[in-house]
Amino acid sequence: MKRRADFNVIIYIALALLAGLGVGLAYSWLISPVTYTDANPALLRVDFKDQYRAVVAASYAATHDLPRARARLQLLGDADLIGELSAQAQRMLAAGEPFENAQPLAQLAADLQQGFASIQATNPPANPPATELANSLATETPIIPTLPLTETSFPEIATAEPTLVFEQTPLIPQNPLVTASPRPTVTTQPGISKPFTLVGQDTVCDPSLKNGLLQVILMDNRRKQPSGMEIIVTWDQGEDRFFTGFKPELGNGYADFIMQAETIYSVRIVEGGSFIPNIAAPTCTAADGSAYLGGLLLTFQQS
Amino acid sequence: MSANFIKISVAVILGVALGILYGWVIDPVQFTDLTPNLLREDYRADYVLMIAEAYHSEINADLAARRLGVLTSEAPAILVSQTLEYAQSNRFSQSEIEGLQELLSAMQIYQPQNQAAP
Image 1 (cartoon, helix red, strand yellow):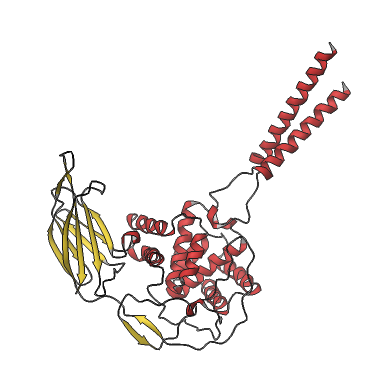
Image 2 (cartoon, rainbow over the protein chains, first blue to last red):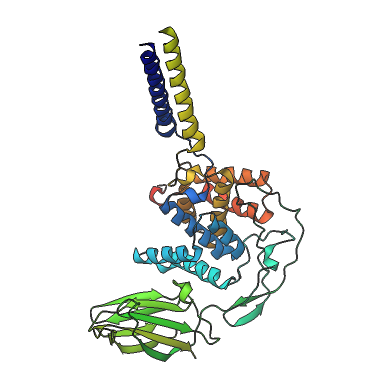
């Protein structure tokens, strides 16, 4: 009899322990969970991450500090920085936002892809600082222009050393400030004025690609692929505009468009005015003998 | 009876303590969809600095104010002012401080476009 009473007590104690555990978990998970007040950007909601990315790109467009932009993007914890930037730029265009809003993202993606800033800052600050950091990264950044160059006497904008350490550590005090002299730098000429001409029109029969895929590749007169070039495709019932550089993994001068069957298109490169009429998706034959809509690859070269 | 009651009470308290330990320390709630106002101070400062850098090039106070609005519901000038204090106390570079000052000046006189003064 006593043994049974002892057994009951053990059962009660176990149940009490479990009940207490349940109450404790409910309190710590539901009633008063750990509150985050010092979060890092990787924990942000998706739409705020997009906003963060856009601000990084806008800042980069002003400073052309690629290492810093990369470090800032890495805070978001994206596995593929370039892919996320490109995807966001395309989402913005698909949502009807103007190209000017998406362009900084595409430019940053393109520059990350090629590993250097394609455009150096040419506008001096409104109030140029009298001092700069002696170890400014600006002197370390390779200047590899993609467009014809001219020598100018604009002072180079200092790219400040990253102020923040991004691994959950406090800020690092910066080095003492020293005076730096303005130095001449190379700047890119705005715009590309020479026309593009069609140098290749190839049928692409690849079942792994989307049906009716029109691929366009632009190369400038230095055989480099320029991003941000506007292409207009027109057909009897409409018109679409798209830009190179939104898929930097395929090249900065790459852009694509999906053609429909039995539709005749015209392709126009806005810069330079090249116009290609009578473009249609070809019919291809698969290995099993079935027909499917193939693609076209148009290659343009600046003269 | 009294001894059993004490044992059970101790078990309850122990269970609660273990539950809280597990829920707060061992496996706390993982938040993944946070809002920017919860960012750590240095990240917030860097975000504002990015806006200042962009503003220096764009000179678009409305856009800058909208970007700042993601971080706080307070007036943008207050946020930039706080960031400027942070920057000065954490030895941001001179050009960064000047950029923040430029943004602060813009935000101090900024009037939202849909609330234009009569």
